[in-house]
Image (tube, rainbow, N blue to C red; front, side, top):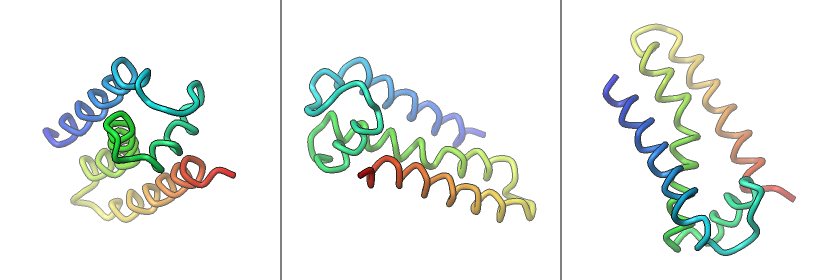
Length: 99
């Protein structure tokens, strides 16, 4: 349970850090978060973009962490992994590979 709370704390910390401190410093269009994530994927070495990419990675791992917290010792962990693969694929597809 500690790992789940740590994961959620880091996710909310990085999200709020980006939203309240680094969003004004980030280059590129503002207003659409998916376009900001796509722009951050291209320029990930700059600090504002790196914070956003790390928050997005924690967001992608969230169902996996929650699922393994409750279903690690059962056979349902296979379903957790399958749901996580679908979750991560769809969010990555619509965030990084928008046309």
